[in-house]
Each structure stands twice: as C-alpha cells, then as structure tokens.
Image (cartoon, rainbow, N blue to C red):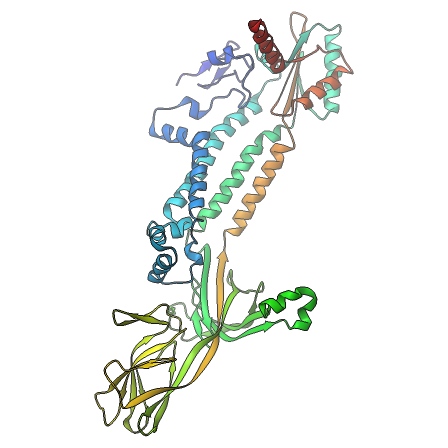
Length: 553
C-alpha cells in the first residue's frame, strides 16, 4: 500500500491521519475536523489500513472493541446459565449414571435437559473455554493494534509542529508578546519547575509529563491476558485439581489425580461444645440446635505406592507421614492439599446375623456381613451355610416386583439370601431387611435373625492442587497497577512556539483532567508573557447554543 508523503517531506505509513513529523492533517477526515483526534496521535493502525488477506480480516475482527464487548457479554450470559442449577462439583455423586439420576430426580425434566446439554459442567466445557480464549485473543490483538503505533508516535514526536496541528488542539491561544525569546526562556524554567520534561528546538518548546499513564489500559490488558491464561490452564491436566473423596475409618484409598498416593483413615474425631463452654458465645442457639461442632478431624496415614501402582490396589505402600486433617489445617504434599470438608457419623459398617431353626430355635452359627464388601457365601456349623444372592445397600422398595437400591451407601441394607441345610440342600430363599423378613417363595423352615450392628464414621475430604494460582495473582496485581496508572496520572503536553509572523502560540493536550493542564498554563502566565488561551471545545458548544437561539428567534 502506498505511503503518504507530507508537505514537510516526511514519509508516513499508509493510513496515517496526522504527519508523524509536523502534525499536519493528511486525510480529508482530519482536515474537516475542528479538533484533531489525539487518542492514537493520528498514527496508522493495522486494522484501519489493511483488509485484503484472511489474516487481515481475522486481525480486524478481533481488534474491534465491539467484538470484544460481545464476547464478554456471551461469557457473562454463559456464566449466568451455569448458576441456574448446581454444577457437577456440588452433586453428591461420583458415577456418571448417578449424576444423571440426581439431576432427573431433584430437578425433573429440566434437570435432565440441563445435564444432557452439558450445562452441568459448563465452566470446563470446550465451548466456554473457547469463549475465554477468544477474549484473550481479542485483548492481545486489540492491544497490539493500538499500543505499537501509539508508542512509535510518542517516541518520534517533534518539538516544532505545524500551526495547523496546534490550532486543532482543544486548548489553543495566539497573540503577540513584547519579548518572545525571553518569554520562552522563562516559560521553559517554570515548566521544568512544574516537573515537566521540556524539549526546546529553536523557537519552539514541548513540555511533557505523565506519558506513562497512557500505557495504563494496556497494562490492564496484560493483567487480564495473564489472568485468562491462568483460567484456561486449569483445563490442562496436572495444573488444577479439585476432587472430592469419602473415606471410612479403617479404609485405605487412592487419592484421585495424584501420582500413586494413598490415604488411610485411622480415626475420625468429632467434638462438640458443652453448654458451659459455649454459653457466652452461642447462648440460646445451643439449646435450639442441640449441639454445635467444636472440632472434627481425620487422623490419617499418607502412603506412596510404586510408579505403576493401580488405583484400586494398595500394594507395596511406603509410609510418607501420619497427620491429623482439621478444618483449615489441610494435609500438604507435592503441591496437593487435602482439606476436611464434611463428615457422616455412624454409617453402618457391618451386620451380624445367625441362622436359626424356626421350630426348635436352634442356632446353627453366626456370620458377619461387611457392608462395603459382602462375601457371596458364609459357611456355618454342621454343613449349614448362607449365600447372599443380591445386596441392596439403600433399599427403597419394590418396582414391578424388583427390589431397588436408591444409592450405593449402606443406609438401609437389604439382602436376598439362600439358606442351605442338610434338610434343604437346594436352599430356602429369604429377603432380609432390618425391620422385616420376607419369604418370596413360600414359608421356610429356617430364618436369618439379626443380632447386632457395627458402625463407623466417614470423612468427606477435598483434594486440591492449583499451579495456576501464581499466574492468577500476578495477572490481578498487574491489572491493579494498570488501573492506578491510568486513573491517578494523566499525560499532559504544552506547546509554545514563536512563529515567523511575530506571533506566539500556545497549545495543550491531555488525555483527561483538562483543568490540570489549564492550571499549569496559568502558572506559566504568572511569570512570563504568553498569549491568552481558549478551550475550543467549550467555545464550539457556546457557538452552537447561540446558533440554536438565533434560529429560534
């Protein structure tokens, strides 16, 4: 694309609005403006210049502020949809079929639709991550499209500018002074005293300060880009883990998402406040709720298995350490933290029964069923034995004659058993529940009778690992630096120039807080002779009002 040659001889890139050297308006649009657009110093932006290749079109699409805003709106709408129902993380189930059943049972057809559309795990979905990635790309391209030409223009700006450039500044004044050279010298000294960086070229002065505030929005963008990078890295395996595991006393389980680590729950401790301990703090609340937790913790042993250890087979484990996990006092190892988050007291561990002759009451032997892993056959005395044909951990009733289990947790155990004896070698069938026993195939001569139950406590633990946290914190810090940089400082420039016709001109520009630069010019006018200035934006507004009033008359 052809470059633009200014009357001053400077060669400008295609698309430049104001000459990089003298400031003359180069486009018809700039020439028609009463005040020049100084947002990017009239420099050539790639998105406003090239639009031929596919790369140009992609660049122009993502550099648009409107596109960026629509992406943000799409992310906000998607995030809002994700709050309508609880996400998968908060669902009290781990298996896929149990999760689907939970949404259907609790929320009906809408819950099923919500789950089937993938909205139950929205923030980890590919399309939500794509939106976040598009926002990051938009921030990068929009920043590069603006910050590079802006930096070049400010770096190369000349002290002496063409009068057409100065006249199009918002603050402008011109007039004759008696001693222009002396006035320039005194103005230079005063501007330096006001902490301006002053450059002089012949009969022209450029005083500038606070340029670094112009980079505030782009520092914001950099912070946001880092923050979004951290968010997207959470989808990469190994960078972010947030898992839940339930472990019973005495169990040794694999810790999800770890490299061969196992956890053994040795004991769960639950302590409550006594009335004497909490009378001053809780008062009547203790009487109302009955008990308030003082402490609950899990005493654990952490083991490390071999590198090829299988998650469900804790073999050849080496003890790493023993510790107590309490609320806000997690177990830490290899960038992982294991938090105590929940508990269940008195979960059924085992049930003890004996086989009895109904007629004589003779006890033919006792057996204990471990509810987490029941055996299929229990050998008793004198050839008697009991087979567990089916086990229903949380029996919820019959559907079309078939017994149902609502959850895999042993809350209401029921068993379909076969009782073998010398009299009945083919076995007798019995359906055994805690409070009742059914005989589905007719009356039996023997009966499985309940004796006792053993309970244990269960700990709800959360496993977390977050290698993206430093990136998120750095992004947030950089963003706040950019906010302060752009909010509490402003970029001020004052031009003083003695023209060949004997007049002196003063012009000024700032990106915000125009009262500050006017105040600085007033301070200079107190020590030397400079022309009076006008705020041309206020003047335009005044003239427009006068024209409207004249038209009404």
